[in-house]
Length: 187
View 1 (spheres, helix red, strand yellow):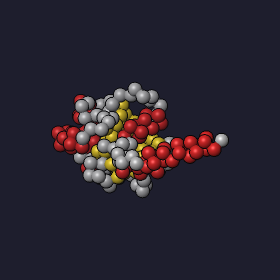
View 2: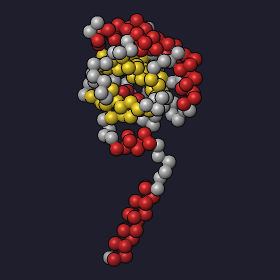
View 3: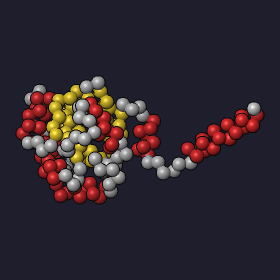
């Protein structure tokens, strides 16, 4: 019995030290492991962190009450995603005090230079994130919208104070998005 006890103690200690010695973890990943599964910490190209919270009817940007949030799920190689970037930038500029657009790439582990090139080439002058949390929030948005795993991109989901306003799959005219922004803002 004492051999079993000694072996169990040694095994537990080795597992503890092995887990503690993993130096490859990203800081944002460490933060996300501490937070509840109802929050996502996304890191923008400017290294600013954006905390998105799950709400019963959607998502909201932490400490941004009253603003419209658009989560734009895209890929840098996607022609409709490239085409919509300048339209989203136009809307961000027009509604700068009332709107936050966060572009979330579906591409895992792409270099920030690729996102910066996308921004420059296609005029994506809004928040672009390249975070370890991208996949997790993309899955959560798709689940809330009942889309499953194989949805088309671009996918934009618009929220106001944690409530879904509308969502769009594929290329969408700027006027339709603007109409929903105005409706959400009561204008």
